[in-house]
Length: 426
Ligand SMILES: Cc1cc2nc3c(=O)[nH]c(=O)nc-3n(C[C@H](O)[C@H](O)[C@H](O)COP(=O)(O)OP(=O)(O)OC[C@H]3O[C@@H](n4cnc5c(N)ncnc54)[C@H](O)[C@@H]3O)c2cc1C
Image (spheres, rainbow, N blue to C red):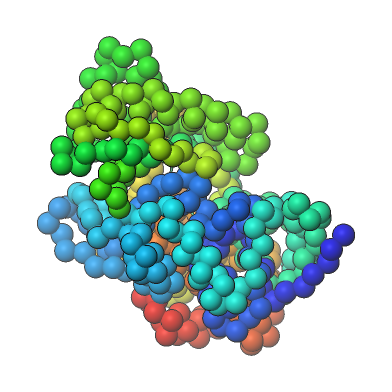
């Protein structure tokens, strides 16, 4: 059994994990990041989801003027990918502002970012356990082709999306399996003729409603299927599936992978037959794995509430902003609820929502942060995940430098100052 030690251990290398690792390293800590995949980027790469969402201020109509509220590491990632030709210009629809990104370029950019700041990467490394003593994580157990390794870290940041560290160490969280937002299995088509027009969301929905009447395979199609912000002229990512799945249950995950793949060819056939731009298109790549929107949500010292989001509230311990609408894929339904912020340009993401109850040296960042249901359906996308990741990494380095006994005792004014200095919009 290998035994190793590090200042900051980041579990999970999605947008939150990469942002956390890079930020802790920038602030001077020795950092190691683990991911069970063979690449960084998390669901953005494995699920080929296609857009950097949640980076702009609130939009309530087509005419609203918006501005970028997510800066810091999120913007650094966007810019690096843009410089390699992997990001589209800013595009928007009625409620949504985003950038398209190329899922082939993103993991290359993230490798470079991790190495640039001296973070030690360990891919193909699955966290399978975590020990806790007197409120402190003492050891994290990792399984890989090299065997079982035990890593001791002064601070651990749980960016697994599924709050695996909190789960393995006996912490408290919410997971209501019956109400989890469904997953999806995206695919990409090449040979698209964009001069014939990529159908909009309402046009796709209308075509699917018509198909439902006559097509025996129509039950495979979600009503809010979409073509996702293409970066390339001839390739388009297709989000056409909806899967009931519990991302923390291996039987459920296996079924969803197989069901998701089984939906791809019928959906592609429907797309080819229905939309002229796709007449000669073919499937050129599948998601590496089913995309999971929601699993465990930690019980935090604080919590992002639904009203915090709807009313665009500021927080005394705000560590960054988000204004993505509440975008909730409803369990058991074929549609998605989308509700924009009722007031304000953006809401604050509170640091207290990153601190799992009962721990001194553990933070969580990304889609599993402490949040009510609607709030989570806004705060789960790329932009806010980079914000909470950056805050967690910066806080970890500060805790160590100041020898603060727990994250609850951290000097928040100082944290906000550092984040501001590092480009975050506070
Ligand atoms: C189908 C779908 C479409 C979406 N569309 C968009 C979109 O267009 N734009 C957008 O911004 N967001 C979108 N989202 C949301 C977004 O992808 C995620 O919410 C976001 O990636 C969450 O970031 P994260 O870092 O918290 O977690 P993740 O991206 O899920 O990353 C978690 C990482 O942790 C790793 N991991 C998990 N458990 C362990 C473990 N035990 N040991 C080691 N590693 C582990 C995983 O391999 C993964 O790499 C979509 C989500 C889905 C499912």
